Length: 350
Ligand code: FSX
Ligand code: SF4
Ligand code: F3S
Image (cartoon, rainbow, N blue to C red; front, side):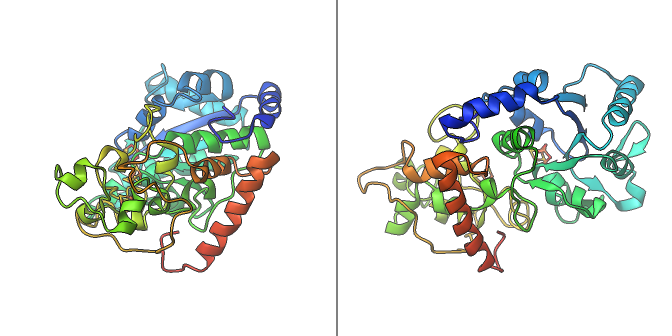
């Protein structure tokens, strides 16, 4: 687990001790307007696996996809968990909330999504919105937004940890939970409520194809020579230059190198960003938010990135966010740099 959150080896004992003595926190997970992709992506995490998460680390007391209970029994379990853990449970929200016509377009157990969210949020210790739907409306809010879908934060008008992505990377969720479990606090957030460890940098800054962008080598069509050789996908509409996420560092599905959209040969569609995904055509050119050069360039002869660079390792070390040893020293330096950049960049999504 320490590896998954990028903590150095010296932190293993401290994290193991913290988890062993900590009471498993109750987690209530709500599903509203969404496709369950957030949960599906969590089911495919390996470090830790979802069963390790829900059997050893947290007490998942309500989750429509994973719980055995149904109907009134399920709602009773939710209310009992909320009563027993008043002020201490983590509330996870997956999916957007419809506001039109008094919210009738999403109802569970006789309650509208809005009523259920407000009831569950009242005594939660912290609220995590997982996925683009819950963090800014996502796919259900796409124009003309027939049900008036909006985010958890918009309904609650109070701080929410936002983990956008459609689906979001499960490790950003797991890291946030493990951070809370071991350090007793939530990770540092940016002005949009997103953990800086995950959303502090543009995809374009850490993309393994960046050297091709800088050298002007672009794929112009799917299947052309440039595409087959792993050149930059900017001209196919890659939104990496205006999308804040750590996909190139932590990858998806624990299946090895290149397992993220650009690594698989498809442009990033900006799935974390409001105003980009679902609004701008997939193949339209991205806005270039910065022209910051990468820390390391790939070798000129390298068609495609194949492994970890120091920059990647340093960014992964930033996951977890607090200072323990050398890895955390790097993390704090990175955090400082990112903050300066974000402070100077009012027009961006950062
Ligand atoms: Fe689906 Fe989640 Fe997209 Fe939304 O992820 S993957 S539609 S962000 O709420 O289930
Ligand atoms: Fe990578 Fe896309 Fe940037 Fe090209 S435009 S370097 S493919 S993030
Ligand atoms: Fe989404 Fe782009 Fe990452 S499409 S998964 S933010 S590479």
